[in-house]
Amino acid sequence: MTYLLGVLAVIALVGVSIALHELGHLIPAKRFGVKCTKYMIGFGPTLWSRTRGGTEYGIKAIPLGGYVKMIGMIPPKPGDNPALLRASTTGRMSIVEQARAEAVDEVQPGDEDKVFYKLSVPKKVIVMLGGPIMNLVLAVVLLAALVSGIGVPTLVPTVSSVAECVPSTAPTVTKPEPSCVVGDAVPPAVVAGLRAGDRIVAVDGRPVTLWSEVTTMIRAAAGRSLTLTVERTGEQLTLTAPIVGVARTAYTAEGKPKTTADGTLVTDMVGYLGATASRDYVAQPLTRVPELLGSMLGTVVTALGTFPAKLVGVAQTLLGGGDRDPEGPVSVVGIGRAGGEIASGQLGGDGLKGVIYQFLWLVFGLNLMLFFFNLLPVLPLDGGQVVGALWEGIKRTGARLLGRPDPGYVDVAKGLPIAYAVSTVLIAMTLMLVIADLVKPISLG
Image (cartoon, rainbow, N blue to C red; front, side):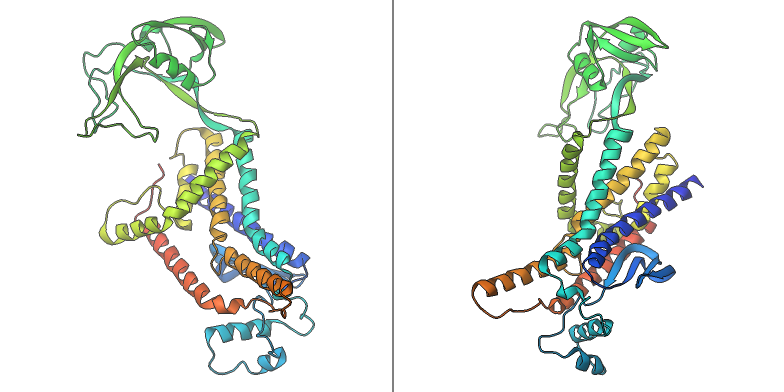
């Protein structure tokens, strides 16, 4: 039941993200006088709808996107009479002609000045950027709530557990973190009397607030004793830990074990206490939001750059077997599964705060991806419409500066074959990911 609630919750949050994206288009379009006949969340059969102010607002069955239907997205050909064109839309037509005819049919008498194509270039850009910008704003708000409200997951100097021994076995490539065997020495944490739940507040008299500060001093103290000041059930105690030196796997900056040219694992001799840290959510100042947002923007750009290769990997997995890439793309089905795993506690034992954090982080990442994806400069995406509007502005400005006749509106209908091709690819990609998420799902746990 908890799993199902998680699935439904994340689908609802995805729906809210889509709804806000489309609202980013709808509000400026209506503000600029464009007639918007439909505002829909999802595709396929309509589950619910209501008409207000000349716009039908509704929810459809398939939560894979949404749309705002604005009249006059495609301008008539220069010199065409809309009335004559409307009367001659029978017979066989090309997809461009058919789309143009349908666009003309949408414009009823009295709506001639409520069409999208008559907007100025800046207004067109504002309308088309409204959706992606809404996703970016939502992402920033969510990140601020995560960073300064819930806090950032951080290893704090509260002991989660104490080791059973000082492992005597050397680390290997297949087992970089060795386990205990009979005869291993008692760890310094046990000798010092350290217990789970103890909070280390100082090491050798130096105050600490992060576990990383504790480990830095421990790793450098092999062969000598450290004084640990701990808080236990309201009391402050002083413990002495005889730090021992152990061989530990050396890691790269990317967190991968270091190896030599012949594949031998590289180790470092470091100090060992034998205690693990607890994880807590530590609130950060809002000034950290731009830094974290910049880091995530870079991550998303990189992810989009590798997206085609990742899709090929999904196809190969479906056709040839093997495991899915845990960092590969997923469909709304995969996002729903992630929500189920989060709600059922499969992604960590941080309680309700951890569940809320992971839900919000998932939606934050989704909105950041939607922001960038919709800015791709191809039709039918928002970025393609922006490029068309900017090209119109360049042509008209150039003609005005050169004293030439106004070239008129950019004929976006000419780009419809590309738009249909891109749409076909997107639909095929979505279907493949849905099948992959059903047949060979990724488990975030």
